[in-house]
Amino acid sequence: MAATHNLLIATPSTTCLQITSSRHSPLISANHTNNNLFLSTTQYSHLNSISRRLFLPSVSVSGLFDALTGGNSPREAAIAIRRGMLLFRQGDVLGSIAEFDKAIELDPRQKAYLWQRGLSLYYVNRFEEGAEQFRIDVAQNPNDTEESIWCFLCEAQLYGVDQARTRFLQVGRDSRPVMREAYQMFKDGGDPEKLVAAFSNGRENEYFYASLYAGLYYESQKKSDEAKLHLIAACKSAYGSRSDDYMASLAKVHCDCRNWIIS
Image 1 (cartoon, rainbow, N blue to C red):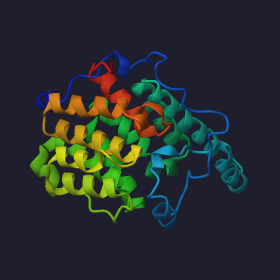
Image 2: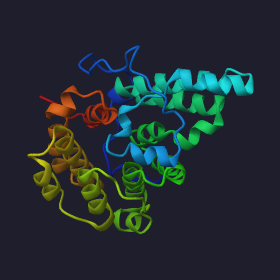
Image 3: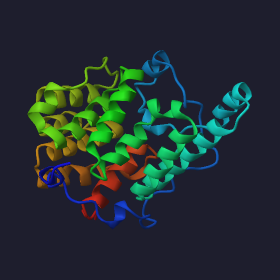
Image 4: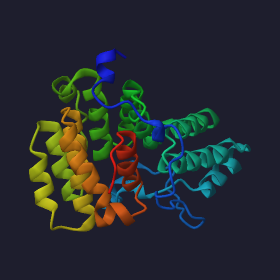
């Protein structure tokens, strides 16, 4: 990657490389599991109204594969994914990537679903690999608005906003109004302030997502001050400060990696 690309966002601080302080909420409990490790496109479409970032891979799912294959690799891969997600939530971005890569090594089928890995790659400036991960994911789930946006965010750092927009991944209609508006803003250009204003009096999760993606849009435009304003607002929002949503943790990790203090 050319040096100029690295200058587009701040170099990740040590909080991106090590586990951060305990101010991050406790994030994975013994009963916070579900069976969504492998979902069909049809199943995903029914979950669009709830961010799938809320879901964690369940170790129990791999038991089915163990029975079919006679091996433990899928089970161990699921455990590695859960460890990677926990490490990311705690601010250890490099550690999370190591766990996600381990999961792929144990069970290569996992790569097509590891959107978490793509997010981590973004925060260590591995934009080309991040974009590849999101493109692979969208090929499996062509209705994922957020992965389309994150692919754009990676490619905007590589090629600039205009060229990245020519490569924008088209996906199906998101059932969440806030994500439909965010998708159109990234795809066609728009005003992040209008996005936030439209959902400022809406549901708590809508305001959070509007603020999150407004900040990320500004970052793609190299407008650091505006990005900081909205990312911190996302973190301080009721949803951002209390939710176990993976993207709420991401907003905090983002601020840590940019050395932005959430007061």
